[in-house]
Image (tube, rainbow, N blue to C red; front, side):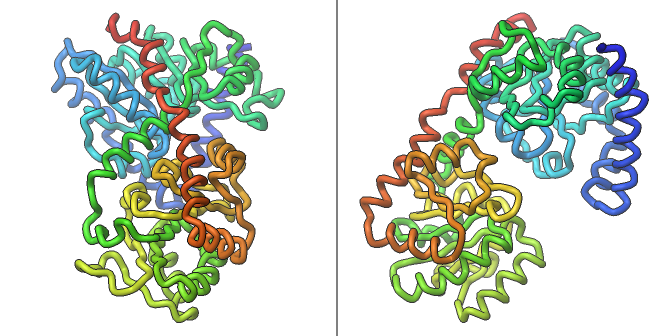
Length: 430
C-alpha cells in the first residue's frame, strides 16, 4: 500500500499541489514571496555547512510558521543547555515564520524547507546532514520523510495533535497517512487522547509517548522575562485597572467598542489598551473611525511620549502583545468571532480573567479555563459590559478567576523536559 500511495503522491497529488501554489502565487503576495525566497536555498545551505566544518553535529527542527517556532523554542533551549556542542537549524514552510524569525541563542541557522520533490529532499538532507530531524506539530511532507528515512536520519514528531474530527483519520486519508507516518521513529502527542487516536495512523503503541505541549513552557518563559522588563512608555499602566483587547479583528471590535463606551463613562479608574490582530492600514483605519463615531479619545503607541493623555491606547505596531499582558487587569482575546480564538495562555499566566467570543473550541486551554471559571465566552457587547463591570466591582472575584486561568498553564508545564528525557539517547549518540 505504501508503494501505491508513494506513486500517487509523487505523480499526482504533489504535482497538483505545486501547480495550485503557482497559480495562487499570482494573486497572493505571501505565497509569491515564499517561492521567490527559496531561490538560492541550496547555495545558502552549502555555505552554512561549509562554515561549520565536517565535525559539527546538527539537529534540524521543522516548523510551519511562528506558532510552531514558539513550540520549538523550549525544546531547543533544553538541547543547548544539555548539549552545547550541537548546532540547531530550523526550517520553515511559511514566509510569516521565516521573515519574523529573530536570531536567538536557541538556533544557529534558518532555512526554507524546499518543495517536496525527491531531488530536492535528497539534496537538502545530503548537504545539511542532520543527525536528528524534529518536526513540530503536524507538517508532514512524505517525500522529505522518505529521503530522511532512507539516509538513516531519525525522525521525531513532537507536540503532535490529532483532533477527534481531523481529516487525517477519515477512511481514505487514514490509509494515506498510515503509509508515511511509519517512517517516523517516535511520535510525542500533546495528550493521552491524541495518543489513542494516533494508533489509527501509526499502529506502534510503544513508539507513541504523550509528553504534553511545549507552548505552555514557552508562555511561562516569556512571562518571566516580561515581568522584569517594562515596554517603553507603558510603565504608566503598572498597578492600574487595564482592560486589554488583544489580537482583535473587526468582528471583535463590533462588540468591544460599544461596551467600552459605557464602561469608560462609568468607571473613571479604567484604562484600555487595544491591540489589533494585524496593525494594517485597513484595520487601524476602521478602529480609528469607529472610536471617532463613539467620541472616544485615544493615543497611538507610535506617537506616545512619556505620558498617556487619554484612557485608550492603540498599539499600532507589532511585537508587543505578549509583554502587554503584564499590565492587564482583565483581557479579551480576539479571533473568536472569526476562525477561532487566539492565544489565551499569554494573558492567563499573568492571572487575568479571559474573555473571548463564541468560537473557542479550537483551543483546549480555552475550554479548560471556561470549565474552571477562569475564562468567559461572550456573544455580544452586553456580555462584555456585564463581565468587565463585575470584575471591576468585585476584585476578589477577579482574583479568583485569574488564578483559575493561570492554573491551566502552570499545571501543564514541563513538556520540554519530558521530551528531551525520552530522546536524549539520540543526542548522546550524535
